[in-house]
Amino acid sequence: MTLKNIDQLFQASLAQSDLSEKQKAVLQASLTLFAEKGFERTTTRDIATLAQVSEGTVYKQFKTKQQILDAILQPFITQVFPQAANEFIAELTARPVTSLHAFIQFIVYDRINFGLTNQKQLKVLVQQLLDNGRLLAELGQVFDKVLQGPIKSTLNQLQRQGELVNWSHARIFRHIISTVLGYVLPIIILPIADPDVEKITAEATEFLYAGLHQKKA
Image (cartoon, rainbow, N blue to C red; front, top):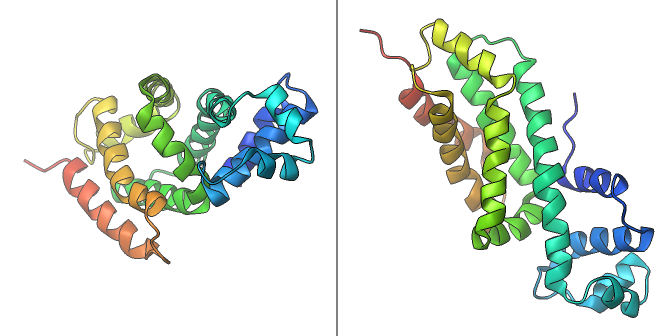
């Protein structure tokens, strides 16, 4: 299974929407430009040129750049992020559970690479999510739903094997997510040239394994 990147998932969400072709073109062009140039440095003329519409058309559909960004963020929360999470969980749970260490290592390595692949798009979105409590709460609900899916059986298996601490699944996942984000966010936000993914993966895996491994009595 090949996981889709954010641009592909966003295109798919637009294709399923009731927006006009011009509206779709404006939103797709805006995401591309916000990622490449930044929100503040992107002009409506830039958007119109890339979308191949008039600048008046941009203003007719969306009164401000913030309205454009809001129109991008909502499908990210309701469609793009849930689809990305579902694809990742499907990939994760399709793998044989050989050990807790391998389980953690796969999560860390995969999510770091996801952050690198989608670095520019995620940089645009991270700041907006942090500034918008409602969107952040909605994103939290997405992760709660993920925990109710196939990942439960994997965590249960690792606990039955005596490898994984006997914590609630929510607590375990919060521990994993917070640690992974601690490594991924600097990659997204800061201009880190060629981060050593193997080294980062090994370090984060070691830390998580030490905290989640069931200690023998």
